[in-house]
Length: 98
Image 1 (tube, rainbow, N blue to C red):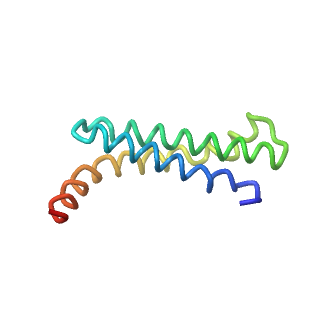
Image 2: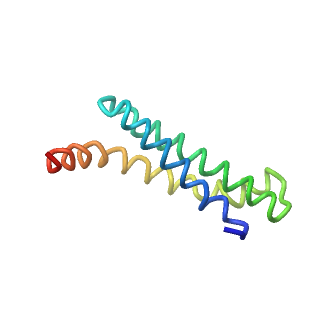
């Protein structure tokens, strides 16, 4: 947690909270899955990038190039995949819980 990437570890908490709360409130709306994941990921990037900037005394531009830009394509692909899988998986898990 004390290293330059500690903000990303801390950022997972509000990221998961945002995604979970939005999906719980609006689960019948399929658009909420990608929207909540994009918002959660943006919060994660914000925590991580700010922490990185403070730790290494980077400018915002340099921190974004190091911490965000390289991960955008992979994170976008994961959001698309998770948005397709999550609604069906959630429905299946709810059915098994009953």
